Length: 299
Ligand code: NAP
Image (cartoon, rainbow, N blue to C red; front, side, top):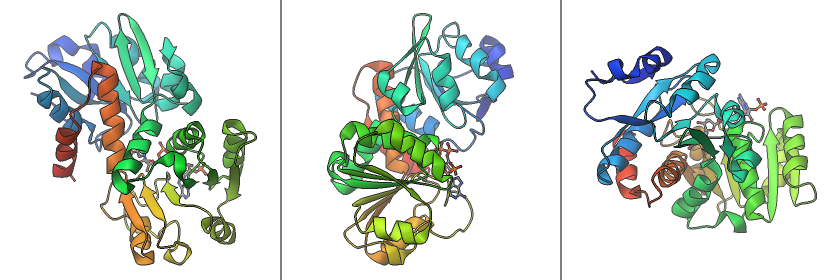
C-alpha cells in the first residue's frame, strides 16, 4: 500500500516496502517534519503530464539519518530528491559536487543522482525570480527589495539571488540583527545593501525606499498572528510577497490589501522552484500548468 510518508526504516528495506507500488518511486522530498509538504502532488502531476513512469514521495528523514539516506539514493534507483527543513545546509556538505549558486546560497534543495555521484543545486532563489515575474509582471533585478528573515535559509537564498541579479537596493531585516549584518557583508561587501534592526522606526524609514517586501520568516504559517509589518507602513505602489503559503491570505497579505498594495503568497515560489528541480532532473521544460493546477487543487 502506498504511504503518505516513508521513513529511514522503509528506505533500508526499500525493494520489499515498495514491491506493491503502482509506479516506481524515483523522486522524493526529505524533511523533518515533512507530512505538510505539497511537493508530491505537484511533482506527481508533472510526471503524469510528461508521461514519465515514476512517483515522488515524502521521506521523513531525521538529521542523524541524512547522510545514510542520501548515500542510498543511487543504489535504490532514485533520479534525485528535494530536501527541505532542516536539511538544506547539511545536504550541501554531503554532496560530491555542488552548483556554484547553491554554494553561494549556503544550501541545497535539489539533489540529482549522476552515476554514483550526488550533485546539489538550489532552486529557491531562481524560483523566486520566476514567481515575482508571474505574480507582479516585474523583474527582481529592477526592484529595491526588503527581506524579513534575512538570517534563515530561505532569506539567505533570496538575498543571494538579489545580489546575483544586482538589485538596485537590498535591505536585510532579521530578528537576530547580527545575522543580517553578517549576511550583508558576505554577499555584497561594497554593494547597495543595508542590514536593519527589526524595530518599527527603522523599518518605517526604510519602507519609504523599497518596491518589494518579502517575508521569509515562518510568521503567518500557523494560527492567527499579527502582520510582521503594520498596514500603516505599507504603500499602495508596493509589492508584498509572503513566502508562507499555508494560507491564501496571511496576516502580511491582509495588511498589504488594507494598504492598497499588491500581494502574493508563496505558492508560486513553491511551483517555480519545483519546476526548476524537474528541469534539473530531466533536462526538459517542466509542465508548469499541470503542476500549478495540482497545487491549486490542494490549497
Ligand atoms: P529558517 O532557516 O528556520 O529561518 C527562519 C527565519 O525566520 C530566521 O531568519 C529567523 O530569525 C526568522 N524567525 C523565526 N521566527 C521568528 C519570529 N517569531 N519573529 C521574527 N523572525 C522570526 O527557516 P527557512 O527554511 O528559511 O523558512 C522560512 C520560511 O520560508 C518558512 O515559512 C517557509 O515556509 C518559507 N519558505 C517558502 C518556500 C516556498 O517555496 N514558498 C521555500 C522555502 C522556504 P532568527 O535569525 O532571529 O532566528
